[in-house]
Image: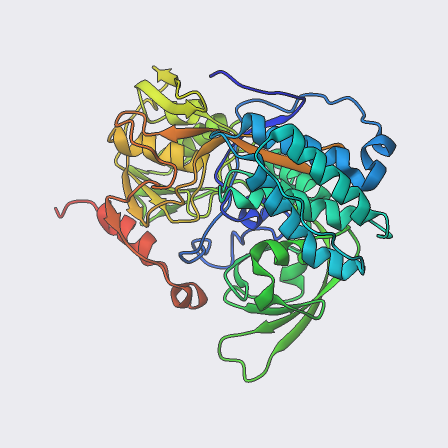
Length: 472
């Protein structure tokens, strides 16, 4: 598959509706393998995700002093240029810069500086960025630290496109993304959360959150005293994340508890197991895949299925619920699809690009159910679409995230990064656009927040029922 870098970058195939779950593996962690027979999965809430067809390219050390001059205007201009030149659809310069200026307002108030009158942008690219530059430099002259102003401007430009693949990552988020893709987890407390206020979906065994007795089903109502209901998932991510060895305090609303529960956890590196498996009912091999990590999962997935075969599995359940994506992994698709196009996408120029698999299918094809939900994103959706369209798996659960595209994530030089959508994905056989639509299950089964809090999993139950052996 062709790639389109314009600078040293990390190329990602991403479905990012909200940053949190793309980074939750380490930042807010994910999962407990042993709390319940099947790891709890999130309710039907927006997800985030990400994926990589190629490894990171070495980047030259930027001159940070130059980049940060005049409030870091050079970094903003770099982000602006990438969005103008690389985003999958042409963008008007006024749209980006209007959004950047609007986003500066709240941060200017916090910094105690007066926001100048917004320049009159005209969609003349050169003139518009010149007007923005002059006004922004004037604004930052009175700010003691322009970092938050700079980040607000870039966030505003990315957010105005309303594209879940295009987003800004602050330095902590950028580091977490790299670590997560490498399968190294990240520094956090070991919870996976979503919703408003954040709902704890999973707690990693042995993590700081587990030691602090955070439970699946808890609602996080406050983080270090901040009202979590006003933060959103990404805001909660920013507060829960931090440096190893530092503490974070949480206030929890727990089902059945008469009063709020207060806990404190010391952040440490959290690295959950990426592939988990166990037999069900003696004849079903259950496999959960958390992420499509760097280096691929095909070899470990094949080995896991072989182990389950040796334990008597005559069918499989592949669980990609809550899987935000990861590295593009056609060999993993090739374990189930014998021959044909596995990945199909469309670029800014409308050109279709394809990747195929051939001859690497598992030796014994077996009835397979794939579990998905609307937190299944990116490469996990590509994987699900291929198995469904080729008839290799019966999909149970809910429609996937529907945010499937090729994203170029490039560093901006100050530790932060910007992801820009350059391609979107299509069904490998049907050619239907997955982005914005997702993979529709063959059997729709919901799993509610109440189900999660009480340890119920009707989606898994439906998969087991589907694979039940015929009566004698």
